[in-house]
Amino acid sequence: MYEAIFDLEAITPLFMRGADARSPEFSSASVKGVMRWWFRALAGGYFGNNIEALKEVEEKIFGSTRNKSRVFVRAEVEDVKKGNIYRQASSWADKTIIVWSEYVDYFFFSVLDKRRNRKTKKIDIKTRFEYFDVGSKFSISLSSTDERYFRLAEASLWMTINLGGFGFRARRGAGSLKVQMLREMLL
Image 1 (cartoon, rainbow, N blue to C red):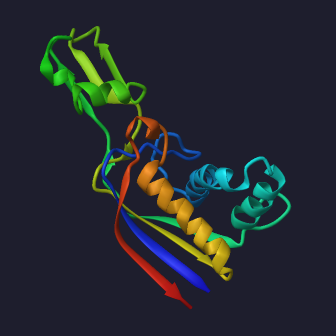
Image 2 (cartoon, rainbow, N blue to C red):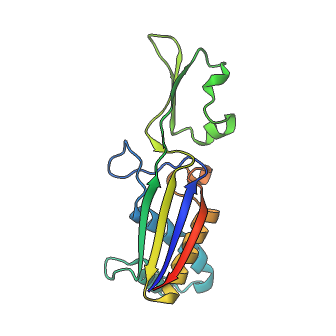
């Protein structure tokens, strides 16, 4: 049995939710979905126009409705730092209206709710929901009895961590994780 455990830390806010849209969730299914996307990005160049071969290998690594996955993915939250912003600014020109930075607020606009409070006449600034803040720690473990599929899944996870991100707004810089420790084992 081949196993790798990635200990990760959030270096940008991570916006991932599950069935309960009010609280953040870091699930194995979501991680596997992003890994699958990066596998297609990696393997597409190798398989070219042979879509059937690509589907066959992808199905063996990640599973499908017909076959179970040959690689087991487990995602866990180790240390949660939940983010939830609420504050007020006196006017739209007030510098406290900027949450992260002028540019980051623009990238994360769908996460922030900025509007004038009719009673106080101040600007309310808040996040629409909780999120995993910078410094939250996660663990992703991959395990398989087949080394070939294990290595392909491991490469997909490396691509996800180093070139992609997790959750929504990942294309805008959110959901970036760094590897704190990698433990590989042959059981």
